[in-house]
Length: 126
Image: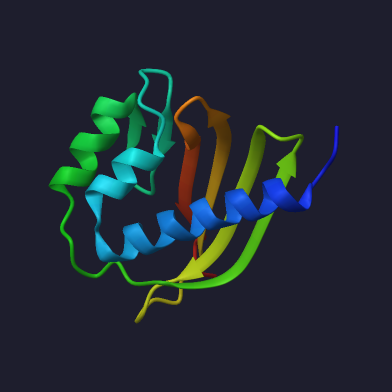
């Protein structure tokens, strides 16, 4: 298995960039598109645990669309073969000293690259 095949890495990096842009602009259609449409997908958020694409979509639809901007301070994307990848970032929001972390597992499915699991958390300030 090849790690970080350049073509696969470029594909995942493009999709991750689409996700990040959709997240900070609250483009719910793109966010819903990029998550696997399955009851098996999950998203552990900073304050919620969501199981299945229906719960994730309902959360996105109900979330306020303001105050979503963030500065990504570190990104690590790693591909494993041609069909699986992880994307991890650290971020900070304006006016906050807390460091956020986001981890995603991406899989190439028949419909394209999709997030199949995600986790968002905030580090406690000392």
